[in-house]
Image (cartoon, rainbow, N blue to C red; front, top):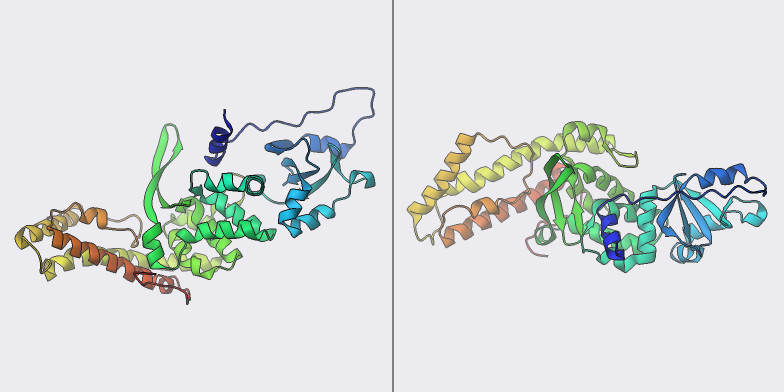
Length: 372
């Protein structure tokens, strides 16, 4: 497997085989210290175990990284101080392979992403363009914790393409779509958000997004993150989302109440938006420049009749979702099509304008203008 193929598999979340550190051969030499035996039972990172590394970092007592102290210290004074506090082997400090050992409480996977950004920054950030939310969130959390500004800013700029405060940015960069999840034999489609540099799956990412946004004090990003939380099933919203490493992301009580209260309001806005697009447009009549008013009225009437007969119950309140694809399926003249698409944008803009208030948030920077 080439380096690029291995790298792509890692981005897809494929769990690579993690080799166990080898035990020393039995010989007449004295038995190793108990602490060393414990260390040797740990897994070592296949990506970050350098033969010339001079410090071993153990993340959450489960995965060890043999890396270069100078690389870490160059980017973070916080990590540098942490490494300085470790006693060298000569002073009877814990050692492995002749290197001092430092323990950190961070997730092994998250710390591995941080090392990837420090060692292979351009390769990580440019690989495929778009990164999964969990990677960007890990970089933002650890970049903030260890005061690595270049990593923090890179992650934050990616987050802002999705969790934006400007309607113009939202329209230009955010696309709602689906991803296929599950294992073979049980696959299902789930809503996702895509920007050129970020992929977000609300059911697994939205709660963590709220918490990391609060961590870095970026209030203007909260409305979009909380909006996505309102689309999470109630049981998950109340109990939290479990990560693969066993941690559970939960909302604060205050944010949980915000989301519960907003669900009803957003459901009403979803219905109002559809009513305005379909029913009000029919009652007000077609566009003044319409080339065939009878045919256009009939096309809208057919859509209205289909909705009434379907008696559709929308499982998710999602008023920011575009109705443009549905509008384009109607047999309308060019003038009426353009008018209905413009009405759809205006209704979505109105929802955007009211979003902070619907979530009981005060966001002075919130911008509902059509242009930047």
